[in-house]
Amino acid sequence: MVDKNHSDKQWGLCKDCKWWQIEPDGSRANTTMGLCIDEDLQPFQLRVSGNSGCNHFMPGEPAKARGSSEAPPVAAPTR
Image 1 (cartoon, rainbow, N blue to C red):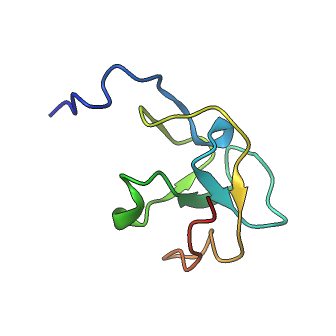
Image 2 (image 1 turned 90 degrees about the vertical axis):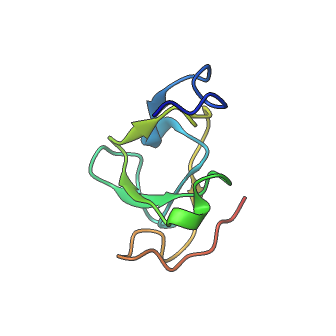
C-alpha cells in the first residue's frame, strides 16, 4: 500500500535525517540504533539503525536523548 501523503517526498537514510534521535554520545553510523521521532511515526516507537530509511526523510542532524537506542526506546522525542 502506498501512502499518497508521503509518496512524493524524498527517500533517505536515517543517519542523515533530522527525525532520527540517538544517544547523546552516539555517532551517525550505519550500525548506530536510534528512535524515529517523525510525528506520524512516533506511535510505533520505531527503533532503527542509521542504515534504515524511508520517505519521511528530512535532511538534517539527528536529535539526541538518552534512552533512544534501548529496546524498546524509552526516550521522549526532543524536537
